[in-house]
Image 1 (tube, helix red, strand yellow):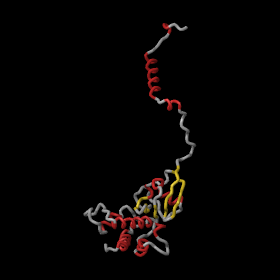
Image 2 (image 1 turned 90 degrees about the horizontal axis):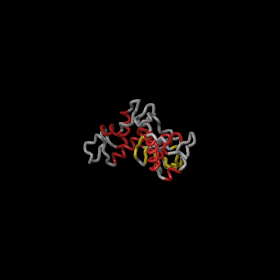
Image 3 (image 1 turned 90 degrees about the vertical axis):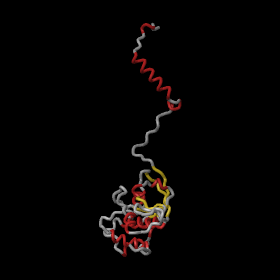
Image 4 (image 1 turned 120 degrees about the horizontal axis):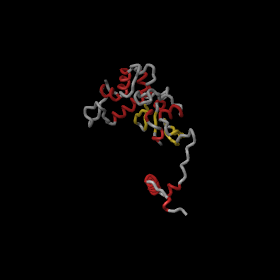
Length: 215
């Protein structure tokens, strides 16, 4: 038997024991008894099954959750008409129509658009039956190297739809009135699509012809 006088208790020991007891008391019983969470296998990444309607055709894909819509189109569906330019949403080369609205496909993840309808340049028209905007770009030589052209055309189609629906822009004088596609409106609305070759005047002529107005 240990005599009480032989026990030595330090102030530090009391504090440590008290802190440990308090911490244990705050844990729920199931948490204290639960085993450690399983460690993901090396190299594994979270994925999801995504269904998209691309150019009128349904596709179901198993994708890494980090896959952008742009990479889904190019790398998984071989729809390489949509171009990867800056990959930062600054050049517009990757513009597609998502449920009828133009977007930069490099800035959005495919898993965010379950069941959405996507239209790429391949879905606008065919070599034998060009979309009016495609035909106008050919007629007015609205391209040189052509790299940005798919994004320019998709953006122009989406932009004209915005105008028809009365959506104003930053340069609209009256945001309550239906906007007119003036040169200033056109330049503002297409400012997110860059052309390194500088074919802007021809692009404007093509869009103006399709819009049925005179710039």
